[in-house]
Amino acid sequence: MRAIGARRSFVIFVFVTQGALIGILGGLIGAGLGYAVLSPFPVPELAPPGGLPVDVRQGAYGLAIALTAIGAVVASILPARAAARVDPVSVIGQ
Image 1 (cartoon, one colour):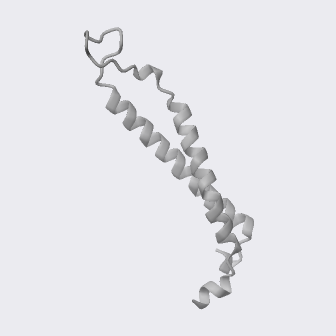
Image 2 (cartoon, rainbow, N blue to C red):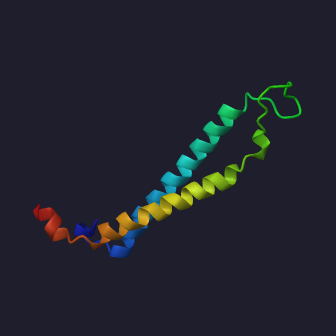
């Protein structure tokens, strides 16, 4: 991108945006799979004695998705800064 004239801030923006999208998608998929895996278990009110009650209503799915997205954005900042500092002439010459 730098070779075709993109500014450093744009390169950082693209990397961080991709990190955020991957984080949100991963959080949504993970929360959905977690809910799907836990849904067959009975809620505590209906669990038989000695059973394994799991209350899927207590899950903090929104928090899990938000923390996953924040983690992905934070993890994308360092590679974004490194990509923005690259000199296009030296990379093309390799």
